[in-house]
Length: 436
Ligand code: ADP
Image (tube, rainbow, N blue to C red; front, side, top):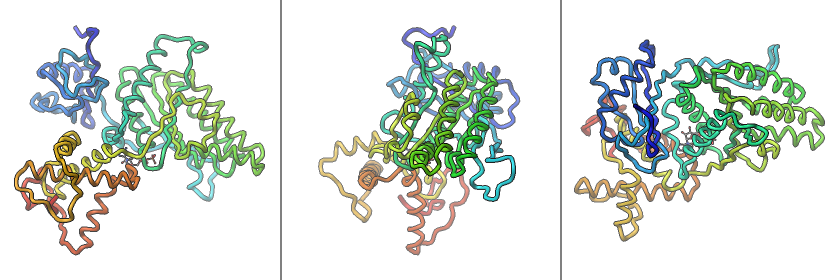
């Protein structure tokens, strides 16, 4: 009954289970399918409600989300959707395995940890994907790339004729969410691919310690690391994402070799890595994600292997608005500031378009007589703030810590601040300590 018609959009429904739920995923999936038929339309993306009324669902489910899709509409009628329901239970374990620099104990421990592994999907990375905001849709682009490689893999395309390396490189200024995006993508894939793979893992390689000053050891370390990776990949029903952070450290190794300081060892390390990467490209169940802050410094032999070389820029004015908006919504929800409606970007842009004179935000509070003009004030001031942040070139990381700095300053001005009482929805001024 589910054979999609040609003009149906694929919509991914992600169903997160409570910890220690023992109901079979199959059972839950079919219950969710039935529950979804109660909708006429579904927002994309949106968090779904109403399942709480069905006892079997309420007892095992934590959250149901309709993910963003490549469909250009923000909502779709149910009969135009080809639903893919993914039931998953994030792992709570953050017990990471480590690969150490040598079999013996070293004196300086910090330099010895070369990699860590975690089970996916993992609770640590829940919500990360949605929190990352980019102007050009990098996130969908990456998912589409994975989808394309799966289509080719499934069709058993001859690798001599059409080939790819399963390597993605994200580069750009620090703090733009590159590492987070790799983790979030790994998490997303582990949820989306759960019907193909029973397990998924994320292996993070710490390039700094891998390409440390002990080049002679690093060569052996790369070898050992990839031996472990190969072991993980040989488990064919497990999907593995390898994250190589700050991959430019790799170049340092080669540069060192060029400068003659470490004649052959540096080169050996780089070559070992490249050889190992080449071996992995034949494996269906692996994806290599890498990040760099300095694209010019990356070894060209590595860049050449990347199927996608994506520049991740500092956030645009629109992205900044959304980042600040999500910060505000969170501190409103947690009762730190008085409850008020934070206008969406679309709303703000409408307000802006209908305002002829350009407003620079005055230091005082604008007269806000009714709900509408208050909301407009907030929108215009946030837009102006976003402009200012853009001019100063603030990164996503810098933006996400603004609220803490603002509160610190507020307290510093001698205001009496008391922590909010733990009410779930602050409705009155009593539970709120700061006005917007
Ligand atoms: P990078 O690897 O580029 O240095 P990180 O992944 O370490 O950046 O980013 C640190 C944090 O900054 C992220 O976890 C996120 O909270 C925030 N951040 C960075 N870029 C963005 C963005 N585009 N949208 C939302 N948050 C962002």
